Image (tube, rainbow, N blue to C red; front, side, top):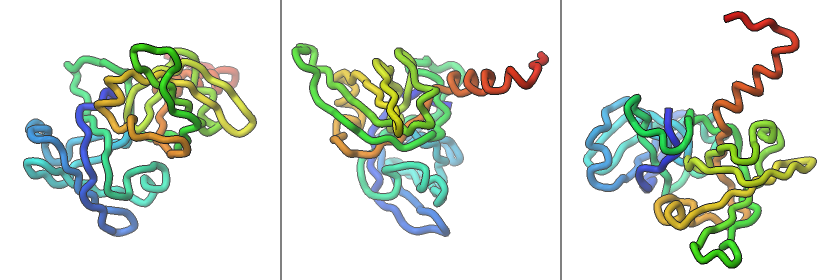
Length: 210
């Protein structure tokens, strides 16, 4: 489990073919891996991966073709958001995140908020229509591994347009500041919303027994 609070920005240094997928080597800031062991989980751009090799400043992982087909930004050299797995005694600064990408969205608009002295940016994302039931005003969404709050939703025939406010701190400490219109992004819906939707789907046909 994760929280969607990015703990470092790393760099994919190499991506080599391995089986039907890829073998990635990710460079991290000094000291970042001091408390990481082989087999630990690290979320990369919102996707949970397993560390298979460790050095002082790099870790390696194997990513399957299925994961590559369901995500974006994990198949080439570039900057990536990182988060180590949640400990039971950690602060839950964001929200409960599984590290399983539910869909790939597209940046529809990304620009500074007019007349905002604080320097906030408005990020609008076209989410797949299938995710619309899980997206709600003041609910949570994960974008490339970052826990964010939904400020507005607007449904269309083919997608759900989501408005998100991005503060300067988030822009400076994640890869979100590099986004531009048309970019694809990894999305994960709120875990609790997923279970509520499933309960509502089945309650009319199944008696729930505790």
